Image (tube, rainbow, N blue to C red; front, side, top):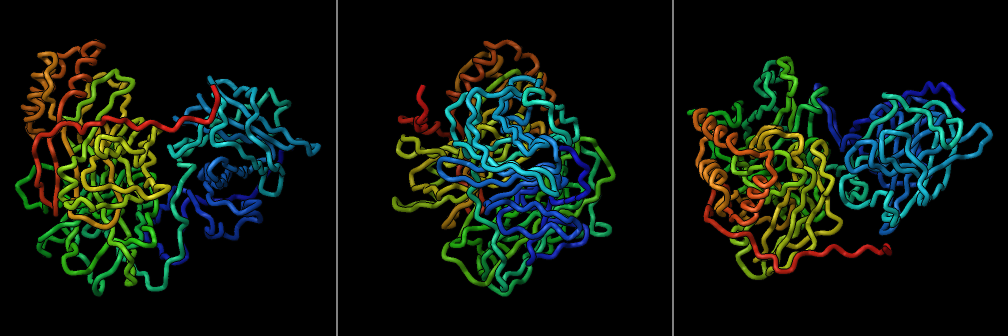
Amino acid sequence: MSAALGCSIILRLFLRPQTLAMPGSLYLLGLGLLLSGTPSLGNDCPYRPTATEQFDYMLDLSGNGEYFLFWKFNTTHITFEAHAKTHGWLGLGLSPTGRMYPADMVTGWVKSDGSIVFTDRFSSSYYPPKKDEAQDYQLLRAEENEFGTILKFSRLLDTCDSKDFVISEDTVRILYAYHPDDPVSEDRLIYHGGSRRGFKSVRLLESRAKIPDLPDDVQYFDFLNGINGKNNMINLPARDTFYHCTTFNMPDIGGKRHVIRYDPVVTPGNEKIVHHVVLYRCRGEEPKYAHMDYDCYAATTDYRPECRSVFLMYEIGAGSFIWPEHTGLSLGAEGDPSFFVMETHYSNPDLRDDILDNSGIRIFYTNHLRQHEAGVMETGMEITLTQFIPPHEDSFLSEGICSMECLKLGLPNATDEIKVFALFHHSHLLARGMKTRLIRNGVEQPPIANDDNYDFNYQAANVLQKEITIKSGDSLIIECNYQSMNRTNVTMGGLGIREEMCLSFLMYYPKVKVDACLSSPAHDAPSDFQIDQMTSYLKQVDHHSQGQMNRLNSMINEIDWRNPSVRAKFRNKAKLSGFDNQCFYRGKKVLGDYFQRPEVNTPYQKPKSSCTT
């Protein structure tokens, strides 16, 4: 039965009761991902979406308060509850890409006589999804109310049906659609139209802790980009990619404290423009250099602080980050950083010159010190032109190595170890999958994190189901899987959105003195003459020199990358080549030696599915 529903609910971003919003800024807490115990939606609506039972997670899929999804899970099953602002039909789907197909879907509605239509479906084309022969979703409840329609249902995480999406710790795109009217029949769905559909990326099997109330003793301070700008705003240049740096002195917080949480502060309207914010801690910088503003990576003879140690970071799609209750980042003690550089990456593909911004980070700290001092370690591939991805590739692997030698600087004794509780994977537009692999004595352990459905626009922290131990003598392989079928030229490593990165930021404890454990490709294995000549020059080119870059591009363009055998030669060269260490200890590069890829005598074997063939 269709009806005009006048209730308008807007729930996209929310504040904890203990925080105060600043003029001209807001908090992004998970882009609409709410955890149980969230605040109310306001009093301007006679109905508020209330789940029929306690759920751990809730997501405003539509972004305008018209379609909400609740869910919870255990080791075998997941339960969903969808609330849509319609008295017609609604649908929910799971997709690896966000496209309508291939996708695993359900549709349902309550008919005018009170009977219920609920169907497990799948899509393999841009036509209405078909009914699945195996109806693996179990309907638990369906009803209409003042807000709209509720569908509650459950399924196995792995139904053993090839037409169903296997729910894992990977990122998944949740599709949604709805229509104000009921279909004539189960086989004749009415097209939802362009405004009543969409998707959002999320990790359904998220293990992040529920956002706790902040204790009374918790205080905060802000690092914001507009500190020197007119009306506390900076005016972004009309550039596709811009890295803005601002320097700060550490405020006086009264002695040693532990950071327990940070929130991104993003200027309204700039949510898609602020791609990431990285706060670096510096050593030995003079206070007089605070409040500098500059283009982070522009060639200049002016003084620029040298800071390599990542203190914390925000990436697009993420929200608050909260440390486990037994860990915290140390601030305010002797030897702790007193000077910071905040790097903000702005993505401005429309080349607008009217964007004003005052985004940054809000840092919460407590004087109740926790058991363990936490740290952040940058691992993977150094941002370098020698990261090289040919065009026309359906799957091309790049690897960054965190070497045993570098890790041993922080774990010098045989019994030393650290425990990883979360990480941030970071890559750009070509990435389709990312994996942080752990190698111990030639035996590959279960991956610290693996996401075969990586989404550039959803780079929230991957909070691990259980802490992973890294021991002295271990090494890491950070693996990025790229798809470059739509590129006609090569893609190199770099800072721009259309360039690439392959990084994994580990959140761990106890803190060690290794800040970054990176590598760059050595390209030393012999191959085709043209390829060898190009990669040899690639390793020495100065990207600030237009003449050298022109010569490099000329060498690249002389190679026929459309030829599959040429690309195969480069893949083989990359596979057989070694690496150059890029190891940073206490903020300084200490290792730059050549090394070979760590031996993996026993690759990790994913546990066999319980499904019978």
